[in-house]
Image 1 (cartoon, rainbow over the protein chains, first blue to last red):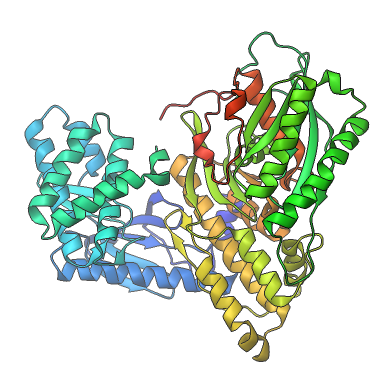
Image 2: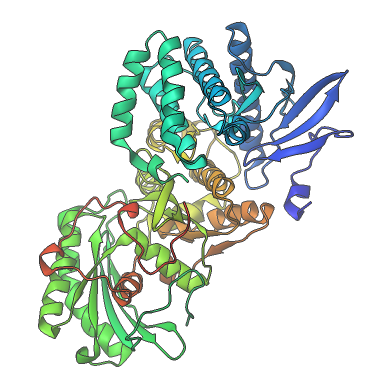
Length: 229
Length: 360
């Protein structure tokens, strides 16, 4: 553990016996654990030593609660997303259902030679995003790393750290654009993958026509997303 | 004195000594710098780098016309001073580099015209330079860090950049005003002095701040926004000042909030690109508090924050010469007619021909 990682430990840090670190992002650490027999993950928004405590505490708490609310809304509206098992607002920890399976990223790469399975997972991904948007939410960071495949036709969206409530066509189109760029930057010959996801989205989303038309405008605007990669 | 950077391509033949003059004037500073490339060591030496700053009275900003007139007044004496300090003769200069953009129209044009005249007079090529790329290249040479994530923060720009493919890609940026603009305008609300810069006086004032006023914190992915925050603190300043907050408290709260936003998006970009080092450039990069916060973040990721001193962080002529000499040495030539200037010139429009391309 680096010096600063230690400095980020404080009285609010949860006890982590039997927790194993799964991933470390810019904002949070995700641990695997067993919660009363349930396979779970804990997403801990750790202290950031560079921020003053007053600001740091507020941001971590607000974001933890916002993510919990978005996930709860997903559950209520039938969007495939992990169940919230508990919220520790004081320590900024979110306890979530651990979704078994590979990421869509790994699944796509492993099934490039199997059109049926590849088609199924892309259709499931497009359908899941359509349901998310129908629930009045946008994800904010749709990538194939932020989707887990329970089965070829059963894709669960994860990491709602940048999610927000919005029913705006623009926000939905940007969501799809981010996904499109992510596909292009992580998978070779991504054109077919993007087309399959968008076809499934078009078939499942009520206002798909409007959103896809706006997606053309967002693409034309291009901007900095072009440099992702 | 800096040797060839690790991620740069070797200078192609003829690999000769070269003296480049750079003229900068995109905002309220006009600067002329001279850089000499020494083939034996691969070093780029700054021979001279004089500068004049247009400072306006407290409560006011600098307007394009008056700023342009300031630059027009100073550019010729600065060129003379630069040559004198460097102890070189104009006949030794191999190319004249100037800021093509982005920046304020009038000031840019004034310096572009000066560069054009000098290039004609001395019969040497003219090299148009992107101001943001110049900040990055001066920073890389000055700190000797080869491939960092760059946070470029100034009065006109706020961008998180990293080299990818053949360009400096913009991973995050402000969606409205620049961070320095936000600081400058709040300094006007408080009536702080513009000498040496409003940002410096906010920094000094913030050191005595203790009471934190919660302010809007607007981060969207890797982008930031400051205009709502500025409106909020400007409109609420009288109320806050009457309600137990001192001007120092407000400067402190403003700095803590906007710098936390900048460090957060920089960290996200570092996680995204898998890079450990940060380079802080632009006028706001001189702020010690921002440097300390960035260093704390970078340390936590096992890297370092390379911050620069005033000589290179603030707009100057040498940085224009540095980016220009790199492009020129690697075969970049601009047709005379294309040597214009423009207020809008995105960092990712420039192909960095001097750097080793990366896989994308």
